[in-house]
Image (cartoon, rainbow, N blue to C red; front, side, top):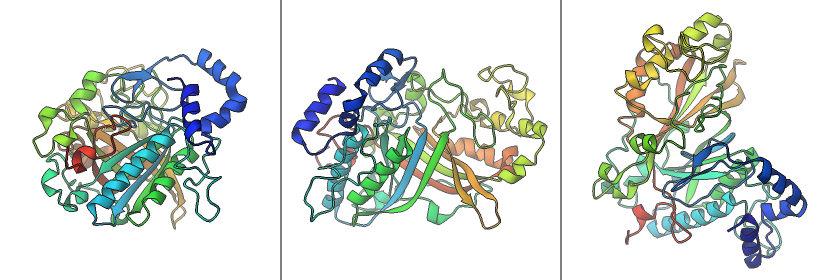
Length: 427
């Protein structure tokens, strides 16, 4: 089905709710044709069952597929991440919320308003959609849901908690703020337009009023990792490229080996996670002012890369295979490399953040680290144990927030919903 056909279909059952794309189509048909002609796919991303062409920044990413979009999908520019506490103890009410969220998420990722839209409805009732995304493109919005360990204590699901969903240990140097950690569930919204991402979380929170409440949230910008290997690795706020060898959305074999949960990784109680993944979220505060007073040589020694090209020590290009022994023993790249961690490999989707300044005038900034893997014990925990002990970067950073979630498989079609395999009595 073409975009045009999809818009007509939606418009026919909701004539008073113009989609963002249909609004844009009025004046943008020529531009769309031009973009289609000039913007041919130069790389691919994985949004569902099969690799798909990378969409232009304003396009829609498919919501349905074997895996949730927003994991191997080409990383968007902006993030709004929210962790929720569940307030209801009524299982049926919570399941209905998941169904309502799924329907709303599907519409928003396609660029449509939620429900009956932001205007034109009953004047006596609040509109279904808050309206701030009207007129904006879908902006490659992806919405990804995860279930935290605490959720399984509710609704009688303790026996269905996967063994791989472990509570993270306290690592040396952690200074975690409980008010910014954990949660019964999370929603990760990624988009190329920050207003589209914020709109999505705002409307899901609004739909969940009385049943869930936002526990903490994080805005992010300036992606610090890439899942498209032909693109230059983005820089973090320290000015360095990190995670150059990140798993690409096109690398099916590596995704299968390190990211997607396979049936053989589960038992009868955790088989609902087949096709899913596990997410670790960490807010990492950077001591920016200290870093900015550090010599260039020390900065490069800390990372094990040069600052200009991003090449590993002794090499010329960013993607040259690093020679770990040429780096200092405590260099970040050396300690984080799979060869230093029994092959542990994770898929990163980090974003920079700034939240103004603290009470001492220092920039409240850093990295909001997101890592997906098929087993937290063999992925993030193994790598972080190595880093937390002796990484030279530890002098300049501090982990201040932490959470882990089981990310269920994708929503297969319009009859499916987030978490069906876990919550449905028939599944």
